[in-house]
Length: 227
Image 1: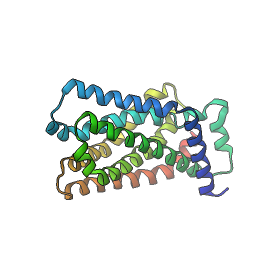
Image 2: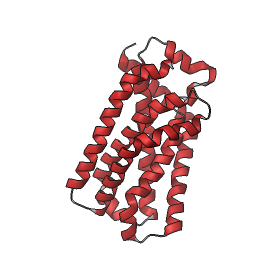
Image 3: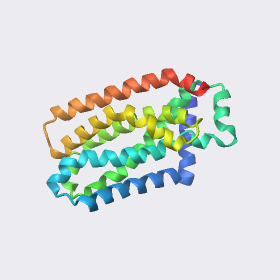
Image 4: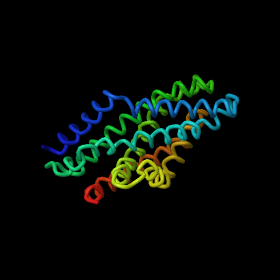
């Protein structure tokens, strides 16, 4: 089987498996919504204040819910030694990583697209977020890519250790800090309607992070699976 044939097969398998149960997606959506609602009720920010803290609120909710989704990346392969079967299959480890990366990007992207309108509704930001929709979609794509690129690798590492649900965020959050900071700054800037120069600077940081960690993960994933 070719590289892309194997990657697409794994991608479709994960997508069909999640569509049948929806257990991870539903849990992640509910968790993110709870975070948004709790912040809204706890602080009751004005519209101006909501614009100023919008990036931080959004990516706190997205990042914590992403951990729930990423944690299941390889956990669903553990029963019946499915992961061992993938390792023994005549396919490249990088194809396994690519298929898992694509499925995680789709899950996280859908999660964020569902929560953006809800966030706009709760914080009375429908107008500025609608005007910034093209930029926000680009930010969502880069954020989903970055979280999935690192999270897929660390999910594979955490799947073979005890307390993997706790180990994944411990490994993931320190590495993702530069990406999350850049996403927060870019999101806040576009919602506030600031000059395009500053958002573009942060988007370049996000893109650089995504490319670098995707390449590193592709190179190291073979050793991750072996361990």
